[in-house]
Image 1 (cartoon, rainbow, N blue to C red):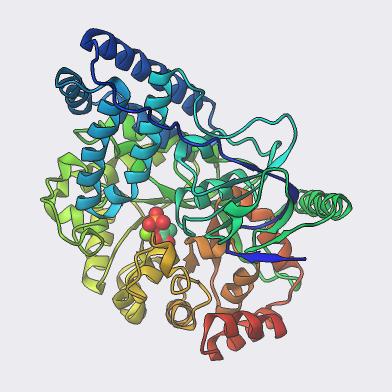
Image 2: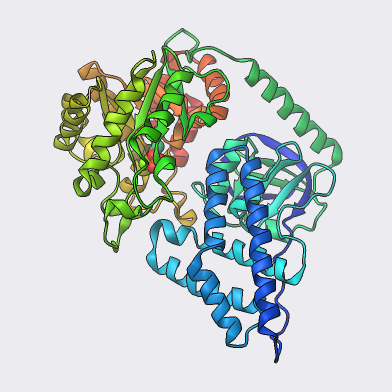
Length: 544
Ligand SMILES: C=C(OP(=O)(O)O)C(=O)O
Ligand SMILES: [Mg+2]
């Protein structure tokens, strides 16, 4: 059977008929004469209906991250500058759909020129344009089809509005021709538990209805399969999910070595299922889209809602991880040519120390009166001195357990010295890969370098684990790599004490650990460390 290859970004298998995303609306020829008043009315009605539709999707979204992206799109659609630009173009003689297209093209160019986070949002503007143009022309909204039966969704890439509305009961799997492992398509597919493959060349050539099966771990798509094979794949997947769902309790290897399985969350809403605790509470959601930091009382309430939900359990709160790539007006950061290497994470506290001190004292106040075991950590720490300074700030806010994320190779290389000033480390493999390989984590073309099985990355994680063992302090991993059931064994073998991931990923990792002894995990870790390529590391670990 012919096989197409891509990058597996959300594990699991699925099979079914291909359905492609409804195409964007085609622009009609530019009319020679228009009635400006009618065009403006059509434009305003289109914006209103798109905003209503996106808000409805945001409210129905199962995932808070998806809802936030959609709300940001509503803000973009109603943005005064954009609306003003469209009305001016209509006054100059353009029909509404053309005026929208032209105005958003200018916005898109500005986003691309800004680079970083804004450049990644350029695709969101294309989606917004297609929606407003379709509404102006009275065409159906572009997006996910509804054929009345389960299907495998195929697209060039998915816009946030498409992914947010995906129903795992009808969308069996997802295959895109573009995107990368850290694109929002990938992150949301994982959050929804839909098996997915991205950057799959040739997938767009398949006509609707073609039966395919996909393996979201291996990144493989089989085409031309029989209905019987498709049924078999789906039955096996249901059985595997049922087995996973039945596994509960703390993370343990087959011989009882504990590896805490913790959740990555953005708010209390993300807490699902039975978790041992939270290993990464990303606090950015509270701050994004504001002109001033969230009021202290609002922060206290948001943190307390998470602490109260986890009595007696660990909650690791990460302080604000923003910077020039996620610009926040109150951080007073000037435009940076290279935002990923600029003032971000803990570095932003140099510019605005009060933002960090308010956050720390809000976390301390929120912890009072709850029995959660609250730990606090800082992102983007590069030196032992930064780590020690952060720990001192935590202590003066009344917080007992302070740690740092290891996301910068310099900090991994000096992990022992970093640990002298803090109580724990948490390795953020998403950023650690990006900075170790000088490869933008959002760049699909560099996916090979961003593979967690790269031996150089494994060496840096090993250095952190060894430093932790020497100091008798815990070292965890909270990047996406912790969710890979196979890689998790290598991490356990290296001596990593906790793995933090999207709650949906926990059962598969729990099962994988329970099926292997600590000695087996250690042999896998040694084999992976001895390899020269990511592919060889994977194969060597499997053999071990
Ligand atoms: C967990 C991490 O942080 P984020 O993905 O939020 O940058 C990481 O970098 O691995
Ligand atoms: Mg990070």
